[in-house]
Image (tube, rainbow, N blue to C red; front, side, top):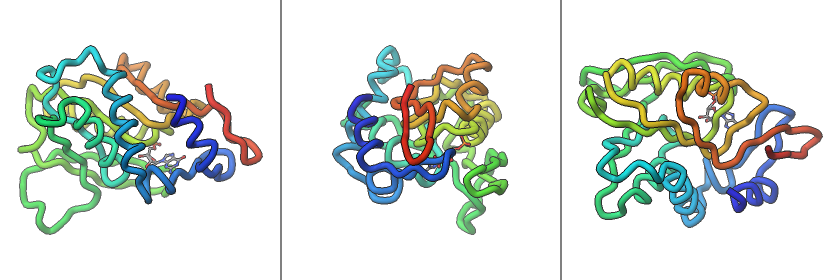
Length: 196
Ligand code: 5GP
């Protein structure tokens, strides 16, 4: 997505050689109009899935929620598929039965427990996963694991920014999972970001 690459170059900040900060428009302050364009593009990438061919959009809190909602709206603004997000930690209000897994975060260097109430992810649900970044693939793999536990059907994984020099894309695609990424970063070097 050309506008996304332009925006990453103008407003993104390279952090060392591994990470890029996009907090001015994507995952801290949100440019809502631009987020809607991202949602529209993610929907275009899965244009072969009709509205009645998808039951849920699945993501993980907090950064994935805005783009998951924008994508859901792009499927059908009047009747969007519900967005379900995996919760980190165990809120005291979460008394339901849950699907549970653990995800390793390389950005935070720790394991995080995530949960989805079983009533929101059910056998047979046709699910599209959406997230902001694909790095080592741990977050996406954790979400895929929850889909499998639930006996739901995975339609694919839509990513806003994939970093090709980390292994997440290979990990998912080697399991024949369809992955669509709007911008694929090749390298981050000396403060310069290059795309595939
Ligand atoms: P993974 O599980 O694929 O290693 O990492 C995915 C998660 O880590 C994303 O949901 C995102 O929140 C975070 N993440 C990974 N790489 C980056 C990065 O370069 N910049 C930012 N802002 N977040 C990242």
